[in-house]
Image (cartoon, rainbow, N blue to C red; front, side, top):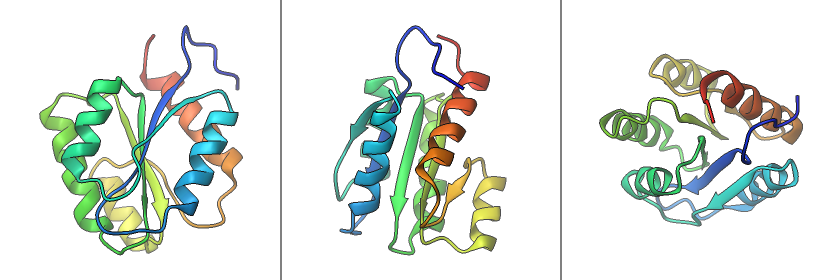
Length: 139
C-alpha cells in the first residue's frame, strides 16, 4: 500500500526515561523516512509529557516509543492518559523493544497499538503504520 495522502505520514519516534540505547530507534526512524514518512526523532531521555507535547505541536499521525528499560508498563499508560487528555484519540501509539507478551496484551487492552519485538522486519512496521493511518486519519 502506498502513501496516497496529501502529505507524508508524520511519525514521532521517542526514547522515554533513562534508557540510553537508541540504535533500534534510529534504525526504525531511518526505515520510516526511507518509506516516505516524515519522522521527528526526539532523542534520548524524554518524559511522557515531552513526547505528547511534541506530538501535538508537530501534528503527528503516530507516536513510536522504543523501550528497552523495562518501564513499558509505566510509560505507555502515562502516554495513553496524556493523549486522551489532549484529545489526540486519532494518533496511533505504537512501539517496540523488550516487552513480554503478557505485557503486550495488557497494553493493547489499554489502547496501545501493535508492539514490535527486536528482530521485527522494518517493512512490517512501515506497513502497519501506513495501514493504520489510512484507516484512522483523514487528510
